[in-house]
Length: 238
Picture 1 (cartoon, helix red, strand yellow):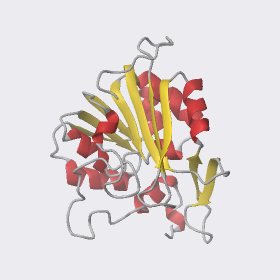
Picture 2 (cartoon, one colour; picture 1 turned 180 degrees about the vertical axis):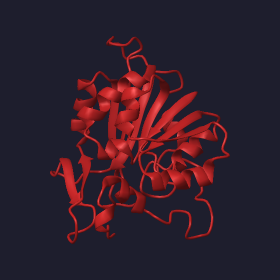
Picture 3 (cartoon, helix red, strand yellow; picture 1 turned 135 degrees about the horizontal axis):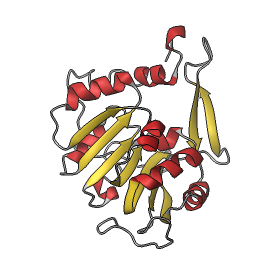
Picture 4 (cartoon, rainbow, N blue to C red; picture 1 turned 90 degrees about the vertical axis):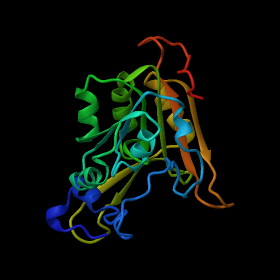
């Protein structure tokens, strides 16, 4: 997708990404369930998050996943730094109950808010595009004791693990680096443990047909007492 010189920024890239989502049919995109994988109706839905009262979606884009969760009577906050994505989210979801839409950089928001949530989740969002050694220390303090961090992203192609850099605008025009963090399950487990998470479960969910690209699915819990090493998890979380 071409990015014009004046648009060569990450915010502009995400503004142009999937620019007609829900608009090609003349309507609002469906938000009947959380789709954790790249395949429709494949894998878990909201049950992957257990039974929270509050949740924060980081890197929410147009907040479809957050809306699906909010419709299960969970108070959901969706954060994204793209003005274009958030403009569409407000147009589509401003009347939804249980939903708060925030236009902000995820890292800045996590670093400055004093709110805690039962669940923080990234549905192909911030956890896919942010250095985990930067993101995870900001996520953990924003979880309630025993709270759950959950995420999904594409299965990495072995042995090419780690940050994968691509030109966001192809190979022509202004340089725009987009980084995806393609960690192995073992690397994710180590990173989460290193930053104080407990009861870590990282696995690859196979695609719907043999040979199809899978999905990295992750869940990890905050200690029940901040700084403690217990592994007790929230009721209903698993």
